[in-house]
Length: 482
Image (cartoon, rainbow, N blue to C red; front, side, top):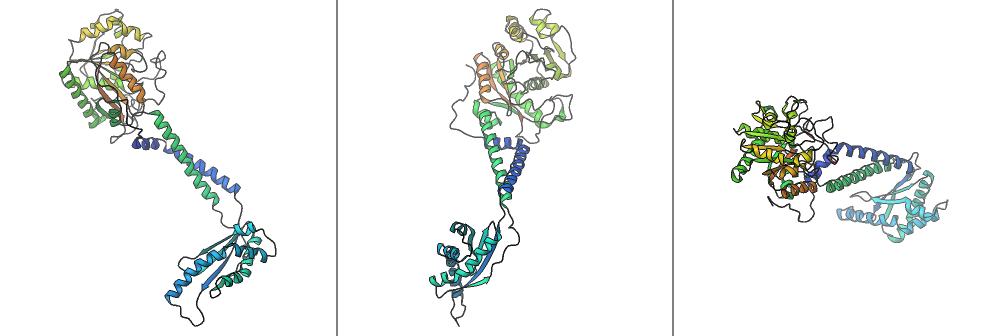
């Protein structure tokens, strides 16, 4: 078998953190919407379920000094420590039982137990006691019960310490500020975002697409010939991504020059001349890659023939802006309606020869499987330095596998975050099994490189779900594959 075997034995289970963060960024508006909806629902539920509360408070000051004793620092520290002790006394069971006996309205112990909270003001000897219930009269009555009962409780525990009443309780005139609805809203928003993020993570793991050039090389053990950055073409509705256009950018053009050099080195080392360019799925940009490789080779003084063997959706002529012609197509040569010389077209602007169809045909696999197709390719081997063949997606239909049988080598285009790894491996296995040497991958639509943004007409092709319908209906759509 040619090339390397797919690296199926990965060590452990790994998550591409950077790729996951990029995936989250794509859903940022959905995440914000989920947060808003969950916060709104949580706030509504919190408002409906919450009940108004009323608080009465009592303040005490702890004093451990006897008559005539000076308030030294050690004595003050002792008072602060004692205040913390009184905190537990005032909230203890004995205190609450005494309050229950003191109140005129006999409240259940559970009501008093839930209503009383005590705290010490930080770094002071001041103790604050709060009584909170759903009724202002009840809160005030229990607070009054504390005032009437605390003296006896304290004197029994610490007869030498004084707990002086500082502020007497008053009956609440209005309900407390209720922040429960806000708290529930914030928690609901957080939970909603967390759940949505987990769902995205599960989909991210199950989807198992390629998120970077390094990941592509690591998971499939073939070299990456080049990583083509994502380029915006919003204002270029009638133009493709071709290296002859210097406005596209230095990085884009230099990447194809690097790919050209690697193909030339491979050809010099092995004698390969016929290269197929395919992909695992539809809409990964293989036609654009095929044409740009051919143009780059031609710019370096090579004689190049581009063969559009994607009979289901031929796109090479459209990408190059060639006018429509009748009766001079590749399939006409295969069906022996015309000679090869009549079907070959020279495109002066790009210094390329083209052998292509401009309309889809109903029986592409049968045409490509004919012996004459292989004979045609073999007949032009000695006429050109390089023959670049654009094929249909390898894991969707058998066309690419058929052509791999009489091609020398293959280049597989992988678009970022599109094809599952399993389908890429399937394409690799199909091409490799039919005899073509896989020289490497081209990583397309790289958003990790600087200055990237969404493609326009020729760019961010399709979505997850691409190409499963690739077959009899493919190539009859009105939209053009770029």
